[in-house]
Image (tube, rainbow, N blue to C red; front, side):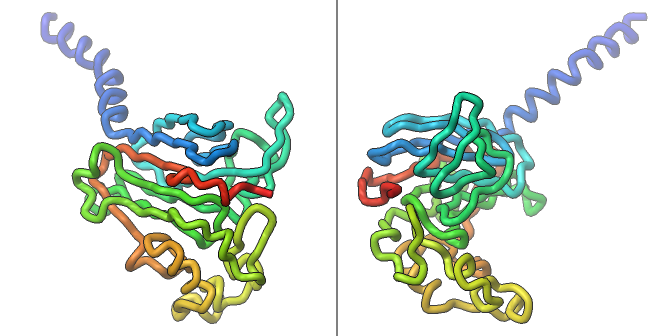
Length: 244
């Protein structure tokens, strides 16, 4: 009887133990707006969306095993009391609480946590959907377990954007504008695409960031699973990336 009671007690505690283990592996993302203007931060699949005035911070708990994760800033937004509206850059279907990816142009923090490859996190900054605000995406607490640290894209890409890629509030990637296999790494160029003059422009501005879809070698970062992260919009505080 005593053993049965002991077993029942252990089974009762099992869900709590599993919950604690999951929480231990979850990552905390601290999203900070250092832009001298308001942005509407977005995060999927965990987070949704949040208005961030200059200097404000948003903390998101992202479950272990999350893949296809993105964090980005939306600019030039207006929402009603029900959270419906529109953003000039990064709009995710006209809602404050995003459940879908944003529309270009938008600077992206991308990640997959506790992946099957040795349980590592993989993360990057991508300009494959263009650029709207400068961004840093860095492991917290000094980056122990992260061989390369994390990516930075502090340049004001919008101010130097080639004329053909200019967009209200941002700078488009050439795939968005021209829709060719060469620029999108699709169709006939799916396995053979390489850098172009436009991708070299983005790489020159932000060497850490993806400049075209196959730009893996210099643009992918890793950390041990369970690492926490800081995403910072306009890390230098410059005003020149303001949406207009």
